[in-house]
Image (cartoon, rainbow, N blue to C red; front, side, top):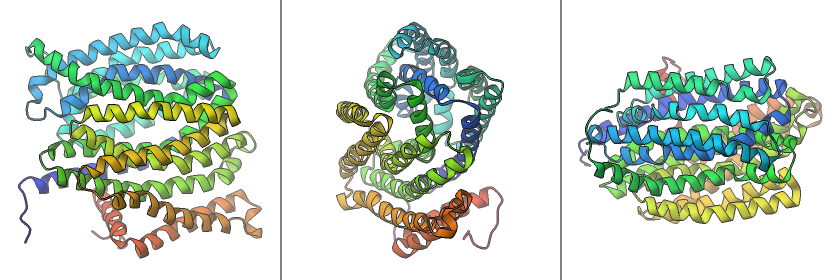
Length: 500
């Protein structure tokens, strides 16, 4: 009989509960994001999306300076958190102020590069939020270490709802691209006040200068990795901003925002829950790798069918909602929805590297990724503009992140076949069931109506995928069903169809 190690049960229960709460938040955020995207697509022009997309290339990279990696280092000091809280707080705030200044100085230069002086005001407003946002960094780490994911999920849902609602109201008022940025500093202030009240940081405790040097020294490697990763994340927008019009950038920005939601919400929340749990398992590499593998398997079998369904619905769905206005975005949405799921597992394996404190190795992987990504995107952009860039992004994500995941998980004793299964089996199952559903929507009586096509694709995919998954990987089906039954129980929902 297997002996239970003290703390394993409570850790597993806390992590499972965290995943449940954040999945609930992901579902609500997905609905809110989809609805707001519909309103904004009707209220704004492609050029508005293009301008905010170009502004984000500056602000997102500057945001890396604010985070710097202090949070990752702080998460490693779980048992002595109070000793490190004060230096972490002051480092974060100082970097936030520096980041604000850097963004304001960079704004006119970005305007010249992109030939768009209207982005200056957008960048300045986003810069004001930067030091305010840092006030919540240490409290957020404390909440993650306490695994209080219920509060984090509730607040994230509120923040997403407030941001989307505020953006829609401002867009309706005719503020164009400014609709995206005006709510940001307001919500940053609300978050800082609420998080500091919920988990008050220790900021006046005396600390030694060596603590600052330790945090900055370890954080600098994380900072370098995050900077490179953020350049890669913004690389497609940067390239398009240099070679295409605002309308083309706007089409791509709209398509990417639409396509990436399942990956960011599911993978991001899985990572937030798993990192503190994986860090606690650092003394047991085998269990640590096994936990990462189980989470990757669950994530992969969830995110791939969502993304493939999204690709199938892009054509009839966007035409049904917007007529001819966003037709040019359809092939971009389809390409990105097929390629982006391949990046999901790398979010978890990246968290595994951080939990192992292998920051140098993460920097090596990031350094290799940048020339590969930019080379592919520049080539794709020259060949076929936004669609070429989207195709290049798909090629990159289907090759490089899976290779990195194989190398990282192998260090924990995970076999290559087990990692490949995370990609190939969900791809075959979701691809085949979605293709059948899409083919059925092209039948003569159905193809005449976009509404009918949307209903048929959604219904058939929603039925076929669980059935095929149950037949091929019953263990994974039961694992997913178990997670949703716990979620239903947490939300007070009872159903004879959900095992509890």
